[in-house]
Structures are given as C-alpha cells and as structure tokens.
Amino acid sequence: MHSSITLDSLTRACSALSRELEGGRIGCVACAHHCKLDDGSRGICKVRYRESGSLWVPWGYTAGLAADPIEKKPFFHVMPGSKALSFGMLGCDLQCSFCQNWMSSQSIRDPAASTGVQSVSAHEIVDAAKSHRCEVLVSTYNEPLITAEWAHSVFTEGKRHGLVTGFVSNGHATPEVLRFLRPVMDLLKVDLKAFREDSYRTLGGKLTAVKSTIADAFDLGYWVEVVTLLVPGFNDSEEELAGIAQFLVGISPEIPWHVTAFHPDYKMNDRVRTPGDSLIRAREIGTQTGLRFVYVGNLLGGTSGSENTYCPQCSAVLVRRVGFSVLERSIGFDGNCQGCGATIPGLWHHDSRLNRAVSRGEGASAKESQKDEVG
Ligand code: SF4
Ligand code: SF4
Image 1 (cartoon, helix red, strand yellow):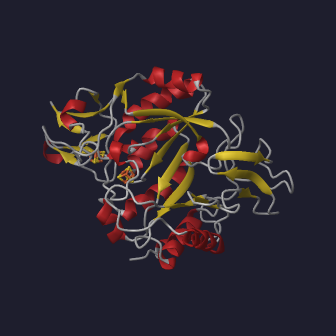
Image 2: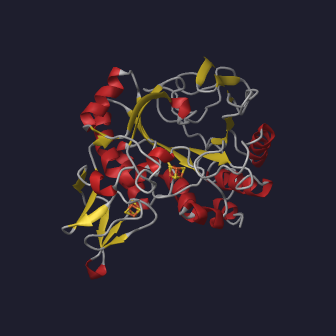
Image 3: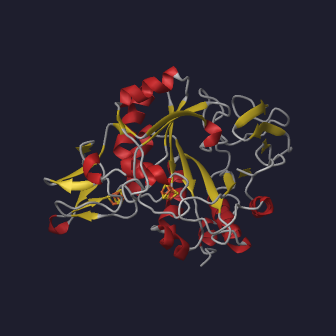
C-alpha cells in the first residue's frame, strides 16, 4: 500500500484546475466531486491536497507503463492495429467493488493493494512511445481525471511529436477538465457503469456527471467510445441496457458501445462471470435501439464476429478482430467503406481527419432520451 503522504513528494502546486471560493477555500474541478479544500485537507481521491494555500497535484511518476494494442483500451475506431503507450499513476475518485485495476486505483485506500512507482519525465514517456513505435499516448490504469495536469503535460510533449492522445476514464468529469484537456487530447473512452443513480452511489459517484461528460465530450469534438462492463444483477436488466442505448443514440448513433464481460474480482466475488447470452442480448438491444457500432468484449469461447466493425450501409466487414488482434482491415485510410464508399466515423489513419458523419442528436432527441433514465 502507498500512503498518500509518501506520494506527496511526487506532486507540484498547480492552479489550472483549482478555483478560489468564498471563505478562503479552494475548489478542485478535476472531477465531479468538486472537493472544497481548506489548508491541510485532502480531496476524496486522496492524491490531491491543499497546503500553503495551493492545490498540490500528482506529478512526475508512473505506476505502470506499457505498449498495448489500441484494441485493449478499447478504441475500435482509432487506427486499428496500432499501439498505444499506456501510462498510469495511483488512485481513483470512485471505489467500485468490481474494479479490475484495484491494485493501482485503490492502493491509497486499501492496505491489500500495492503497486510500485517510478519517477519519470513527460519527455521520457514520449521517448518510450517513440521507441515502441506507438502512435497513441493513453492515460489509463488508475483514474486519469485526478491526475489531469500531469497528463496535460505528457500530452503537450506528445503533440510536439505528432502523437494522438487520450484518456481511459470513468467519465466522472467536469466541463472545466474537459475544456482544459481538449487542446492536447483527442480521445475519450468512458465507462458508463450503470444507468441508475442509486447504483452509481454505491460506487461513490454520480450518474448525471458521467452522462454530462459523454454529451459534453462529444460536443467538444473528442472521439468518444463508451464501455459498459456487464455485471450480472448490477446493470444487466433489459430496461437498464435499453436506457443506456437510448441515451447514447440521443447524443449520436455513431458512438461505439462496447459491452464487456465481468469476471469476479476485488470485492465482488459473489456472482458469476457474465454469460455469453447476456452479452449477445445487450448487443442486440444496442443495435435495435439504433446504435450503429456495438461490440462484445471478453467473451469466453469467441464472439462470433461481434468484435468486427461492419459497414452500417452495406454490412461489409471493415475490420475483422479476434480479441485484441486485427486480422483484416478493408477500410480506406480516409475511413471509407471500400465496398459502398460510406463514411465510417472514427480516426482511421494517423494522417487522416476524424470522421464524424452524423452530428449530435441526429437519430433521436437527446432531451427525450435523458428522460429514459432507469431508477
Ligand atoms: S480530483 Fe476529484 S476527488 Fe480529487 S480533489 Fe479534485 S474534486 Fe476532489
Ligand atoms: S472507476 Fe475504474 S479504476 Fe476507479 S474504482 Fe471504478 S473500476 Fe476501478
């Protein structure tokens, strides 16, 4: 276990995501908890604190650095087959009992969790990306929102070298942090973990904040993909899945939705791995609701083509995948279907432009779909 005190030496004072409040307190706007900090106090995430009048934020270390397939993040509409240099720090603003990264995310709260850290500069992370031939830089493993200033610094360096940049996040964000990152960040993967406010409360967060993040990020021009880990008995009712699908269609039917299999982990060992039938049913619900790209992930025994990208116009297979491997790619570098010429949304080549053929709300009313929240 790392104490927050030992990590305090790997911080720096930074005001980019702090706001002065009445009464002398400082408000942190890095995540939707909006902690209000007096001198000597710490945020809910434990890694950000106020001292000598300033907000101190994590800086200059990594607790994980790896060159991963971009499909593992997962981003399925971003340069298929490319590699993403993934870096992480410690801590999270939520406490999910099914966390599959709890050794990093809960290492400050939970004595059973432990991950080593290593000092590193932004320049060294970008060098590692280049030496591993990665075209993408991704902040992941812990919750990147709580270390957003450090990611901003790494991405600024990455942009000097032409890298595409992104977050793998729980989406419990604020408009301020999304705007702060946008000039140097391109991609956002959001975990939409449930569609009930009471379920989110058990994780320590707010569904409304995550929904706003997805809508806001889309409007700001991020490339957004959404993942729902299907946890039996927690979020897998047809009503809840339909609610998620309707909400996403209301923003854009072109947002890829990944429904992935849960396996017992951390403090949630009282239920079985997600049955394959549930994942296939979730995919049907997504496509019947109007989403054009719904993917199944982590399914034992194969996914029968449900990891492939199909042209929504002519049904041609554009990207054939098994797990994190791309077996075949027949989409033009500009993102056009080579069968019928349809424009497929995404960033398909490093030097091409992001395709977003459908604008927000086309396909359903965002307002209408927000009312369909379950719970
Ligand atoms: S990142 Fe979130 S939890 Fe941490 S101090 Fe800021 S508002 Fe609080
Ligand atoms: S938000 Fe993600 S990293 Fe944080 S506790 Fe939940 S699953 Fe783990």
